[in-house]
Amino acid sequence: MADLDKPAPEPKRSWADEAENVPPSSSETTETVATPPIAEAVDRLSIGGEDKTEETKGLDLSDDSEIKAVTTGNTIYASASTFEELNLSQELLKGLYSEMNFSKPSRIQAVSLPMILTPPYRNLIAQAHNGTGKTTCFTLGMLGRVDMKQKVPQAICVCPTRELAIQNEEVLLRLGKYTGVTSLCAVAGLPRTPITAQVVIGTPGTLKRCITSGQLSTRYMKILVFDEADHMLAEDGFQDDSLRIMKYIERSTANCQVLLFSATFNENVKDFASKVVKDGNQLFVKKEELSLESIKQYKVYCPDELAKIELLRDRIFLVAEKLAQTIIFVRTRKSASDLHKTLSDAGWSCTAISGNLEQEKRDTLIKEFRAGLTKVLICTDILARGFDQSQVNLVVNFDLPVKHYGGPDYEVYLHRVGRAGRFGRKGAVFNLICTERDKKVMDDIEKYFQHHVAEIPSWQSEEGFEAALKEAGLI
Ligand code: ADP
Ligand code: MG
Image 1 (tube, rainbow, N blue to C red):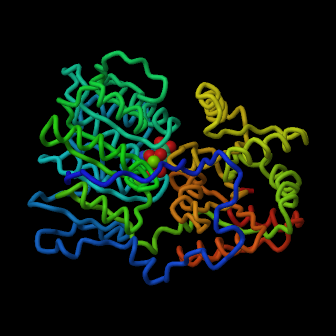
Image 2 (image 1 turned 120 degrees about the vertical axis):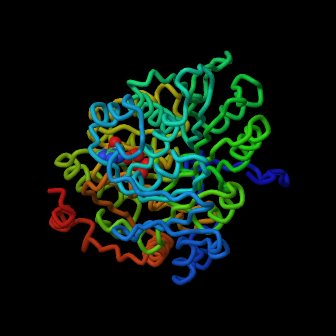
Image 3 (image 1 turned 90 degrees about the vertical axis):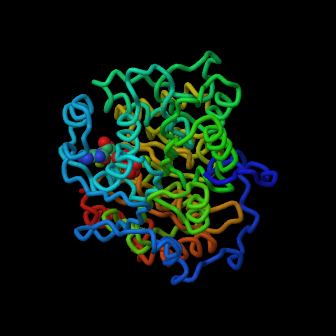
């Protein structure tokens, strides 16, 4: 880990779950929307590490060129085609087969797990597509490294939201069902008693508080994981808290392995991550491979905001009834509750979740959606990343993902799309376009990912929507 002392942080901004329904400051102007040149954009997520060539070796990934590996040191890692090859305990194998029902490792699991589990347990920065099983990589990593006989905290996993922390702990407990592992979910509301759980999964603010107050000892820490790591290290994300946590652990124990996992790492974050998490192995997906071809994306032009609501009511809800589950993304907390009210008043059954709801309410709504009791969920970007519900096959961008200054948020777009079509399943995305600014944002997204997004001929055309869903393989 690098020296983490740095200038005073900028004022914290809420992430993708804004309290106010105020348009971004760039308002309707299109000039302020930054479009990266395609070549530059391609470069930004393609593999780096040229400066390391002397000490690096490529891993043979010939059967799947989309993941590029840069390894450090002398360790040779063989990709694992079966879970048995990973030298996991019988208890963990049982968890994988009988609890998770997995038969063989996904590509990212095959490549990253040997790196994580082989001494000298190097740090790892790993990127892999949404829905390809990254959770299993770092969860098995933690379970594989924890000494089950020692009843002290040995692994920490930092996640951007309460929902993701809870979800990741659930995966840990299922995978580790036969190991006797103890765990704790450290999110807001946690009682202030000393923590003895072996694995602690939580949100950055709560974890930082637990660590700095001495409630959570870091002396025996073996492995520190950041899920959605690009966001955890981004300046407009959780950089300050994440660095504090890293620094604290670094001070109290030597050789704690750090793992960073995400589907997206833009150039800035990637550089920063490589500086902070030094001497590690790296796995990156080539920029051109990130467009998620398997999930069909469409855009629909709507004359005004009212038309967007009519479209939801008259088209999307009708088709959503035939589909498994749908997530509708909006930009602000207020638009989430307004849209929920409008649609409920019109007799449609749906729920809405955003950061201003009470925590228990958030948990209940998520549970209902997971159980399939609700089919349509309206939400802000608190669920854009990581939320894993395999039944979701339709995503609607009611508002396109934009950054604070009004330009497109490419990473969040990719993460939202990735809520549909988990682990190779089929999925569709409808992007609703209303203003000139929306058009520009959509254009920029298409250019950035070099991916043409087909247009539905008319927002009122039932046939248009049916054809789109047929093409996506959903009906
Ligand atoms: P992400 O890479 O986006 O974090 P997740 O870890 O949430 O993806 O995994 C997506 C889905 O794929 C989950 O429902 C998970 O149970 C499933 N999955 C992960 N690994 C495997 C595997 N080896 N075989 C079958 N399904 C898997
Ligand atoms: Mg994930």
